Image (cartoon, rainbow, N blue to C red; front, side, top):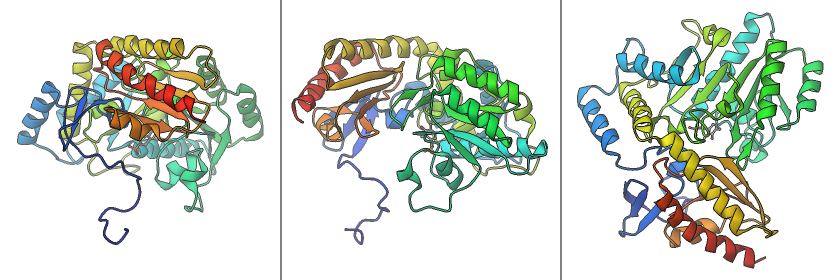
Length: 394
Ligand SMILES: *Cc1c(COP(=O)(O)O)cnc(C)c1O
C-alpha cells in the first residue's frame, strides 16, 4: 500500500472525491449530491461557488496574488480594520493557518514574560484542547494521541481542567512564572466543549489581577460560527490575544492573530514574520467573507438555524439515554452519544450528508453559515434516522 500511495499516510481518507460544490451542496465525481454539514472543518463560511467570493478572487488573481510583507498593501490594512472593528481589539498579524496563529500567540506570551523579567515563562493550557500540530502547538494541545512520538515536547505549559475555577486559582498561587492563559472559547476537536461564560469572566478577572494575557483560540469557533463574530463575545469578555483562521477566508488559507493593549505591542521588527502571510489574495478572501456575511445576515442565520437543529435533536431524543448531550452555539454543534459512532461518517455519506465525528462519540456539525432552515430540515431528515439506527445497535 504505502509504496504505491503518493500521499503520506496522515489521514484515513473517505473514498469520496468531490469534484465541485455549489452553495451548501457538494458533488462527487460520479455526480452524486451531498449536503455539506462540515464546510471543510468550519472553513467554507460562504459555502461553495459563492458568486461574490469567486468574482472577487478571480479579479484579485489577475491583479496581484503576492507581494510579501516587505511592502505595505492596502488590502492588509483593510482586513485588519474589519477585524478590529468587530473585535474591539487594536492590532493584527496575518499568517496562513490556525497553528501559525497559535504559534504566534505563544511567542507573544513568552516575550511578554521576558519583557517583564520572567526568564522561564509558563502558559496555562487545557485538557482536551487542540491548538495545532507544530511542536509548540501540539505541546499546548491536551491530547496524548497528538503528542505521542514527537517528544521532547516544548516546555512551559501548565495544564488544567476546563471550567474549574478552583484549579486555576491554585495554579496562580503555585506558579509565579505564569504569563498567559490559552483557552478555546469552545473546544472543537475536544468534542464541542464550551468554556462557560462564568469561567471566561473568571479568567478575565484572574488575568487582570495577575497581569497575565488572556489568549482565546477562536480558530474554529470564531468568525461568526456561533452567531456572534467571536464566541467569547457571548461571555462579554475581551481577550488580549485572539488567534483566528479556518472560516476567515471561506476556503482560502489564512490565519490572523488579533491582539489588544500590551500584547499588541510585544512584537517589534525582527521578532516574528511570514513569507506568505498577509498576501493580497487571502486578504481579499477575508474582506469578501466579512462583507458577504453582513450583507446576507449570516450571524443571525447561524444563531437561528443552529438553535433549530439543536432543539430538534434534543426534542426528538428526549428521554433517550443513548443521546448524552447536544452542545454548542450557532452552527458549531456537537451531538454526544453514549457509544462510539465513527461509522456514521460513511453511513451519512451514503445517505448524502457530510459530517464528522470527533472525540470518538461526538457527531460534529460545522456547516457553511449560508445554511437555511430548509437545508437544516433536509440535514435532520438524514441525520436523525442515522442516530436512531446507531442507538439501536450496541
Ligand atoms: C483547526 C484548529 C487549529 C489548527 O489549525 P490549522 O489551520 O489546522 O493549523 C488550532 N486551533 C483550533 C481551535 C482548531 O480548531
